[in-house]
Image: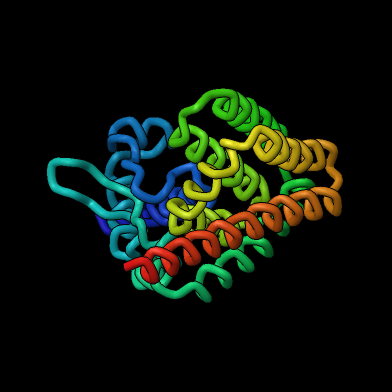
Length: 250
């Protein structure tokens, strides 16, 4: 019995490491419900006892959360680097917005460079598909869809960098800045030349990654974020002036 228990523990350790790897690489994303126990055990080729023990180990680590009657979910804690209190500070302190945009510039330029060096064929196919879906959205007038697919494209680049910190921090940062990205994109896509300029920038990043040109990918991503950064700053300044004018009228 003791030997059997030790065998199960050794297998469960290996299963736990495999599940951790899937979480870190983004195969199981924050908030995702992992497959049912029977299905996952069969997929991984292990017993349900070993899988159950592995899941419990990850629950104790805080990577998984079990909810009675609902299943087991990936924790949101890995992507919690830019949540409360950052969300409140972002809305009340302009300097935080500037710092986040500066950090996004560094993060996404590095992500694009790493993606050009490390992306697999599957990553490149995902990037092509993501860009095609983004172009489709930009051809229409659904702002929410445009924002969703813009964020998905940038996340696909981050995932293709094959750096788990870049992947998770990009997801966290984009989620935090979603409202500001939506505001900026909403203004830009109403201007035909700006809309085309954005897509040219996205295309430049994509083509550099597909061509394995790391320096060009980094530069194209940096130029894109600089463009977005400047336009967002202009938008915020315009809003501030408008509010100031309204206060004077009041």
